[in-house]
Image (cartoon, rainbow, N blue to C red; front, side, top):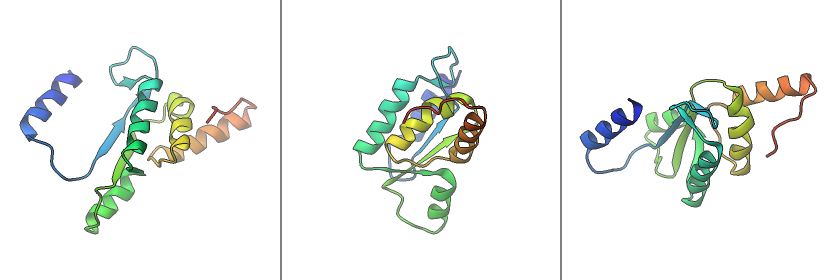
Length: 125
């Protein structure tokens, strides 16, 4: 269903134009969840963002810049809608590697604090 909606949206909106780019994620996992992106695909997407010279920011910052009338052509908003552990384990190291900010940062800090409090290893960057 999600793929059909995305295809319909692409057909309706016409050719790509200027505007804000937002990458919105639900999960970063190998699970058979249609809303999950595999960790290696997520890493490839973030590598592309970096290779294109885009700067990842959380969507709140992107919204503030849009409201202020700033040029957002070099930015991409990154967001995770839930605080799944796989975001901390799989997405956080990739975001850190490419120095990208995301809405999930607060969640990621909480996960890392929780892992440290339990004496568990932190995900490798």
